[in-house]
Image 1 (tube, rainbow over the protein chains, first blue to last red):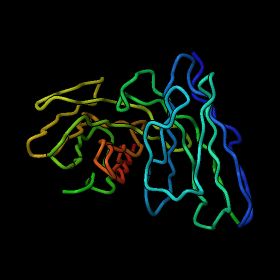
Image 2 (image 1 turned 45 degrees about the vertical axis):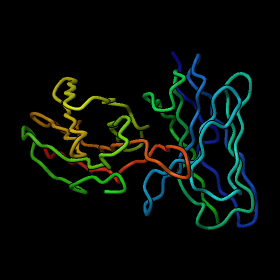
Image 3 (image 1 turned 180 degrees about the vertical axis):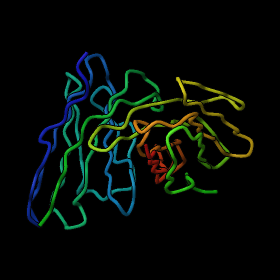
Image 4 (image 1 turned 90 degrees about the horizontal axis):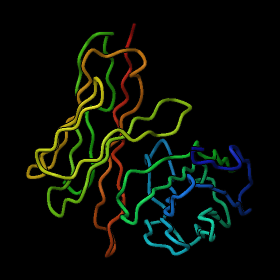
Length: 114
Length: 114
């Protein structure tokens, strides 16, 4: 069974631009969560989608948004990029309807904002 | 405790040593606790999901215990090997803004010297 895939793996953007990251979950998994990992803050929850609906949301500004498609693939968008958005963005998929099931993580997208 | 905390922050041991580290979390409204292993340049990998007070889980040389009444979990590694070198994360859903969001500790970085 293929694992969680994320594209692109690396991205360099400048302040003010916007970026879209993509995540393909494990086949059959309907829940996709997004996390931001920075050295200063550790791993922080952005949001979770289940069956194309946002089921849960962390404490991030509205510049961070996401969506999920009918095939469970998910995208995350960050608008008006700031230097502080430089981070590793991880997505994780889960098979169950419970928000707190075991999660399977992708390799991440490393975003650098200049 | 209002957050998920892990100690120690880092640990250096010799091959063959046994070691353990701690995850502390708010004892009220406990739902579940997850342990993950995150090796450098790889994705976080789920180790255990623990839900019941007194739970003990084991996978090979790694085991974990859970005390929900006092709000802590221990992860034990018996006979550490260099391949055990990784950051070990724990996570709990914690209340935030009317819902529960997955909240990660900062992790314990384990380095096993041959």
